[in-house]
Length: 324
Image (cartoon, rainbow, N blue to C red; front, side, top):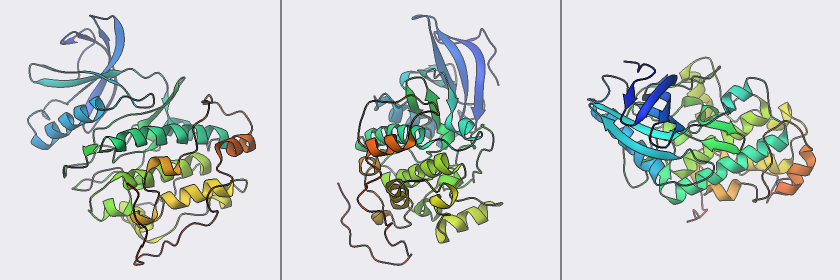
């Protein structure tokens, strides 16, 4: 049941409904103790008694609570009011990356800034043993202070094996398809190992990171199709259209970073988010101005380790030792 404006969950006064998905409803609310605006996420009515949904809700709380990073949505509180469980998070002002992409691709300068911030957030999560498992443009909010990664409802500790239903697709326009079953994630951004039902790890997030970066620059998803079957076939069997075919000015270094992220064999991908991220430098605002060339040069991606992507033929044996 949707909460009405003025109703309360503990000390939090509901202001308005912000959105709803398969794993919860999100409201704008006011913390009456601190007099600040917050976002409150609650399980929909009827979900509280469902074991897997409750476990995922608890897992989201643990995942976010263990992270403190400028590009990860902050968890303020966890509570229960009667039979209603809820999370209290920082209220993010800004649109999602998915909404921005409905207007077309981003300039290289803006895309690299956002990519660096997402990579920093993933690196923090992975160092805490947390895999997001559902990185996509709809889970990235562009704020005045930078990109914010949110919705760890599908996140899990790497030491625990958990399966369950996937979340609904993002509510932003042109949201990608999702599938339901033991596979967890949003189909268009899922790594081959996730589709095959194998365990996801940090490298699965890096596949999704490559998909997001490709989409920011090309204005189209690297793997798409009219049906879920065609999307899965594309991910498992085909390579995306070369980025330079869509954006001829794309630096070779950037194309190399994406190619390494989208390698079918996880052992041949970047082994950590820090590997594929541009070096740290002074943050730039998320506007569509500025010199693409100077940003790429400053980030160091024009002279990446190699302009040639690694072999990605399925069935080849990798001799690369994963980085720890």
